[in-house]
Image (tube, rainbow, N blue to C red; front, side, top):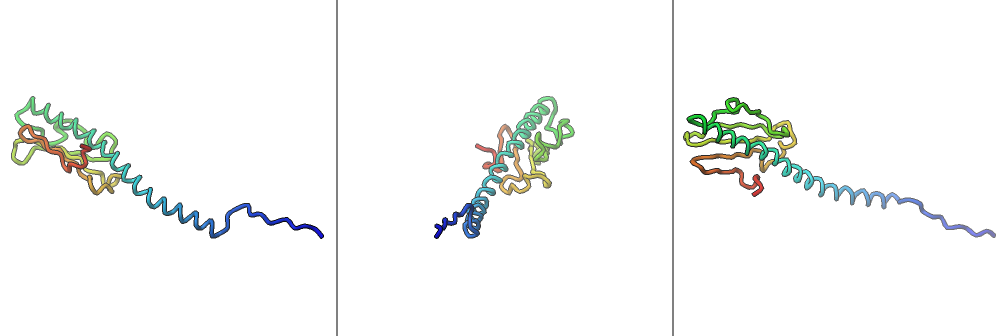
Length: 139
């Protein structure tokens, strides 16, 4: 009589494989939105990199003219942020005592999903600067 050798399992059974896939799917479902949120927050620096120089350009323009520039064309600046995630705009304040600069997420770009900071605005009136929404400015 010959001795039988035990059958060894070299891989995963179907229930084990399904369990592993379910765990991976749950982890991906948690990690992916967090990662996308992190990317959106990091891309906001593109708006900041555009708005601060735009503010300085308005202040320089006012130093040589009687008022602030009414638009980007007058300043000779591009309407796109450095990395292209935002469209820029500027103008005079409605009361005539200041200006605004604004960065709006492009509708066709990855920042369009950034609900909290789709639009970031810097307003300057009578030597006072206001940032809106405040949470988007990283301060």
